[in-house]
Amino acid sequence: MSKEKDLKEGMMAPGFSLMNDQGGEVALESLRGKPVVLYFYPKDDTPGCTKQACAFTNRGPEFRKLGATIVGVSKDPIASHAKFRTKYGLDFPLLSDTSGKVMDAYGVWKERTLYGRTALGVERSTFLIDREGVIRRAWRKVKVDGHDDVVLEALKELSNLPRDGGT
Image (cartoon, rainbow, N blue to C red):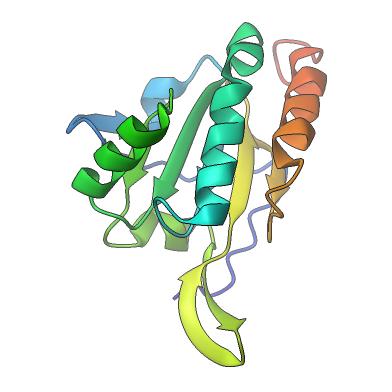
């Protein structure tokens, strides 16, 4: 379980390498040079997670126009991701973090209370990482409705910064 990692804007994003829904490997380092929308979600093919993934897919052309790569991460296995991606026509990779190590590094694996019961789970979170691997925005306890708009707006602001990220 996360010891409440407090990743802040301006910090380097923790590196990782995870298997994607097509059996390949994706490393954060390999995405350098373009902004990355890295989002963590609880479970494939559930109402909120489906709505969020479809919203990112529907806005995909706008994200790509700004040079961004969208990547979703959950603890679900590769086969589940592949089925989910195919079923909804998702146009970005889904990464499998079955060990939870990446979720822990980003501080999104937490104790949560749902219907009065406490259990460990994913806190729906999104990180906007710039071309150099620096976290520029972090959203925690994400509410799905309108989140794609908020992330896209932040990406537009980021794309207006000088190449060095404005630091």
